[in-house]
Image 1 (cartoon, rainbow, N blue to C red):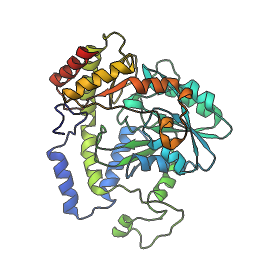
Image 2 (cartoon, rainbow, N blue to C red):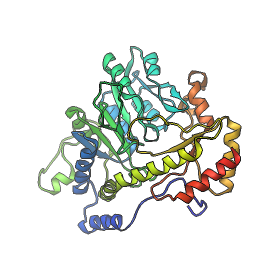
Image 3 (cartoon, rainbow, N blue to C red):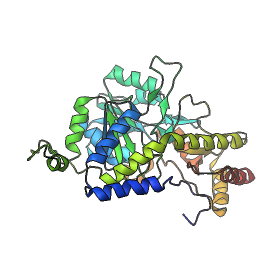
Image 4 (cartoon, one colour):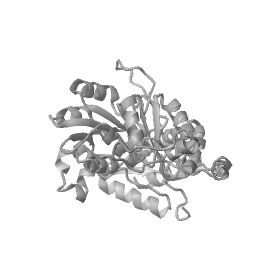
Length: 383
């Protein structure tokens, strides 16, 4: 990160993480074991779900969620065009067909419920919602659509650990946590996430059958684990489904437990800096700070600014790079990637516009007011 004076993201790591790793090394047990079990229990308590199942990464979580729901060749899965490519890749991995929906708009870049309704067909078996930047979409509307059509709802909550949904206009109970509203939900603990362990992920669900299937699939379809046999709880195993090695290891689970304890304070810090960005940038003519009217308690994973046009975006990006302030784009529209065939940009116009004008700004708990002000000063100077 030495290239950047203000990086896009940074870790809150210190002595507690070092001690957690040493604790695992001293135990001499590295594979899925006691740390993973404790991490799962603590995460389930945070999410307010019956089950939390640790896995190798967020992509593995999505793959297992699709498999546990029984998605197969020819099924259609409606999902947002603005998302990381993993959700679409795993749709194809199980033989299903990704069907991309447009966002609500530049101020609210999450999937539009009307797009979900418009794209339902007899082959639709699931809807994926993505909690973009830590902001949940219009969940009450989408839940009603899915329930009305008998369609499974999958939460891609990789940005939203610790986020809480609020909707004063809906009949749904307020204060539901991200990961507790759909049939099954997926989290990522990649290095730039709010809860970061390098690699790692989690699946949450209240459905006992889905949880049981995930447990089998994440470890080769085996009926017992090495950890069970190590503790004398089993002396053999059967293989009852064709599964995968999607387990989480003890070191990452131990790191995750420390990061989980820091999560509330770190999310609060993120919210502070997002508020500062919004205060300093919301008056720029033609520029948009998304989610200004958001009602819920966001995890504030991203802070995004939307330019009036692509030319303005390019001008500000050049100025920020020259100032050694790191930025990014979340995300190019998935259906426009070459591997998904001929571009269907005309079918997702708002997503295409958003991707051509959005700038992801630096955001992490350890930011300073000076770093936020310098970033905003550069933007204001070239906007």
